[in-house]
Image (cartoon, rainbow, N blue to C red; front, side):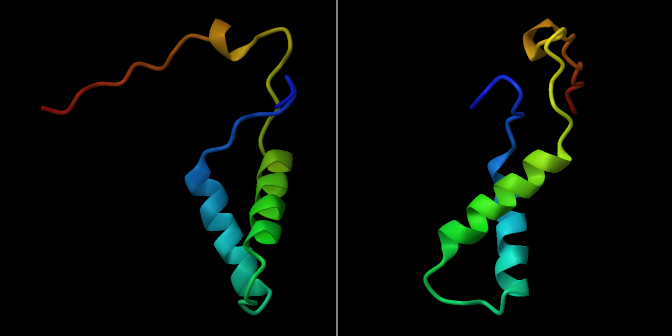
Length: 67
């Protein structure tokens, strides 16, 4: 992955790939085609990280625990 690419969660890719597969009529034997296309579409839609502010430099969001 290059610096300009944003990591995408596998669940999002899986959901988008399934959507693409359904749109294509559920053909057999082509899961990679839908997976890579989904990854590409999601990466294009995701905001790229700014080189001036890498992910490690951003403050982390606090998560409150449910009790």
